[in-house]
Length: 374
Ligand SMILES: C[S@@+](CC[C@H](N)C(=O)[O-])C[C@H]1O[C@@H](n2cnc3c(N)ncnc32)[C@H](O)[C@@H]1O
Image (cartoon, rainbow, N blue to C red; front, side, top):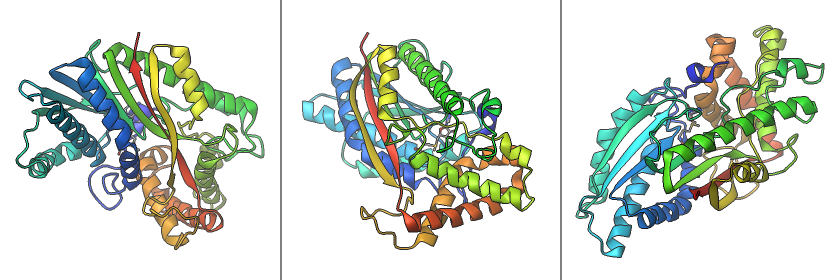
């Protein structure tokens, strides 16, 4: 599976598009705002730079990246005012990065409206001039010149691996895990190790590359889906993708998907624990972690309640399926073909509804801010 050419969120702004189905990520953005504010203010104060370069890695094609830009502009502008400093000569350069298959056109189409809304929201205030550009490419490669970036931000991306772990075909595919697409309670130790190794390799590379691109004192705010428990065999991600595996298996049973096709499909994702993340940052040794925290979000992006009671499991199942489809459709379609997509996500919605009726489940999300110190 080639992630660079096969992964993209559903383009455009139609019913199934990522732009219309990214409320889960929007809720995460709201949750991390306090961290982002602290980091943005610190960068402005520490670096005293009149030209700040700010990057959103894995921006996708929906409005969340614009919420991020808006937050940074407002924070810097307010901070300047609080310090009684002029915003003269201050300039903000934003780069929006994603894989080349991302629908940058849809995103660029939102810019004009965003600029108008920002001007209206800050009517009567002076805002620093800001410039927005697209930057296609994988963040597992170098994207920017040496020591040129002040702030990297990435929301709901770093659970994605650069590729499915190599060698899985030889390790799993016993009669118990033939249909697994991610780690499950019955995965063999060698399967788990391959997923973990891929995560360690990717995340170490990511840190090394960003280290080269950050100025000294530059910072990163990284938010991604992790897992709450240390036990890699059980937890929310296993259930979430396990239900997708079961849905695919039911299509095999109906003769709509070939068994061999399912047996060669693994999702290029790994959701680490906080401890696993800390270990890799420690090994890298070039960053100081200011903040690391785990928070939870209901699987159903439209369920804002804190309670364990679910009001409408069928509706919640449909909401979760729409959210996952906007993210996964391109990968699933390139492996199994377009024709199964509707059936698969209808089945997934049904299985999620059944699961949530028994147990309201949440995603565990890790937010981490760190500073380049060496
Ligand atoms: C779930 S979306 C999140 C998008 C956006 N940050 C938001 O919060 O709405 C994950 C994004 O990460 C991007 N992505 C995954 N792997 C990537 C990589 N190696 N380089 C750049 N972008 C990547 C995907 O293309 C996708 O747009």
